Length: 226
Image 1 (cartoon, rainbow, N blue to C red):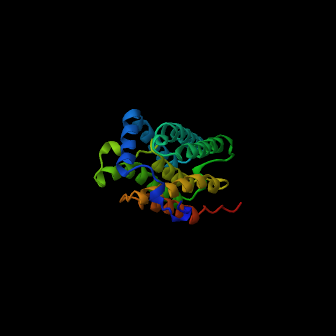
Image 2: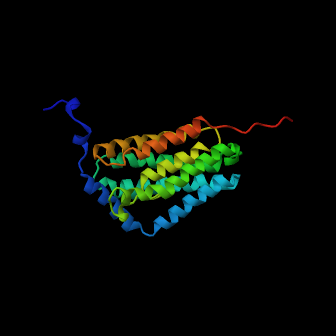
Image 3: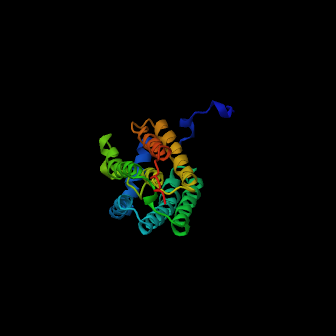
């Protein structure tokens, strides 16, 4: 028997690129037209960042949480598990992130995107809009069918990246904890795409790095003297 360290990532994947992307086609077909609702929700989050207020911030986090729980069940539990034995182990983590987002939106005090400087919110808005609009365009750009497009609120990658963009402009206190699971998923997804030799494997980690850069370079507005 070969030793475990002699195996590569490709030895651990039990599916081909064709099977993997066919999965998204079937998933999109089964859920249509839910994509219209999730993209509309994403655009609502852009508005919440542009016009910050406590209510819109709370709604954003609750909606994000619901979408994470939805993907945990509909994608990982019902769809991805049919080709990947590890998917049922990822689903609880996605569900946990959803519960934490909902709890954060409902329980935090003085919770508003307005606590971030305009520069931070603008950068987060640009990144979020790019993810919402640009990520579904990847599939046709690399020669796949439109039906295989990965859409926010339906597929895990754009949902995780959009969450990172929102968290980058969120109030301090717990947002770094909320970033852990999305970042871990992007790492796993990037490894999968790299192993499948998908040409777009670099896009998700680049977007995640940009979200972290916005977080690290965040400039808080100065408080005026009393």
